[in-house]
Length: 458
Ligand code: ARG
Figure (tube, rainbow, N blue to C red):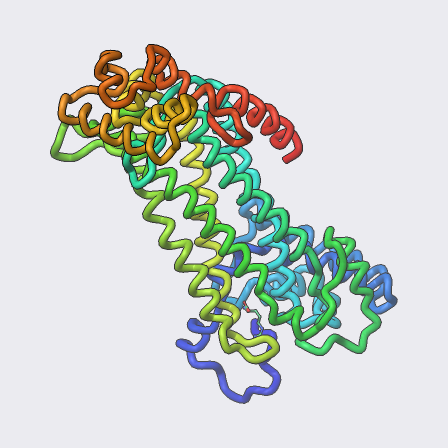
């Protein structure tokens, strides 16, 4: 059944019907559509636009449709134009004439704007919960690894020693920001567009703030044209999801590198790895690679949505129907990736000896050696030069700074004493760094304690 046959004399071309229809994808928010309709009808009755009998009969019908779709007893008919037409047609066939009053004072434009907001709102919460799962896993791993030494890198070259806890804390911060971005978005988007009509409101005495309250919104939107044409919250959500994917992708890249035979910092669990059809020895990090790959797909959704909206005149335009498939796909992708990533992380094993050994190489204590000379009264720039020459000497000799004899140190500067060994040991290099945000044990324990409080409030 079409909602708009009256002014037409001929049937729509079949290809046009197929091209125009959105039921194949908007059936996903049947629940939101029915919930919105129940609130609308409740308000219509409160305002004296529908009788109590009409309201009760419509609500009963809508609830039975919802229950039947949920249970699988009712299949959504793909020959309808969209989920809104389907629900209305099914309602009328169940409750008779009064079903036709459901759409009083409403347009599909404000109806779809409402459905999309309700759906997005739920998914913002769901995505936040997925992020919380990753944060909890990271916190557990960090607690267990405050003394797991490893090299920190810049340019993928060994730079200074730190700990696994400290390295993962950087990702904790990224995901925490992602969570807070979603909370900001929730607050900004939690306003109800219903009652905007097609674009110009309606002459019925609707109580918009009452509907908003029934549906758990903070209030109603403030301009009817904007209400039906605003998809900013979709763009924002896609942008938040893109940033989440970017963080996941960076993390996955490190996991892939750390899992190579050259690094062997970690071992992925068998349950989160895959094999090769030809090379029997292989154990591949496919999950991490797929997450990295799927990042492009979510970025694509963001750029598509921005492009769909660019240049749209006010108010509703059919272009906006394109918001759904790409948003649904991006949400499914990001939530799926967060869930898989969390599972992979939970089961990951850390090769602590290997990490510490790697931190001992690559002159990661060179900065501390220079700082040692500064403490002995040598200006930093001179100290930098002395240690640079020492490093070159060690490279030629094929050893680490710690391996040099006291007299070798002395050849480069009289300021060196036997306390140099303690000053540049791996433990000292990490343990002395206790400024806020640094890897030292005092700093990281303070950090982890504050995370416990943060996590308890999420
Ligand atoms: N399927 C449409 C959408 O997703 C519903 C709104 C239709 N409104 C209209 N005036 N044709 O945007």
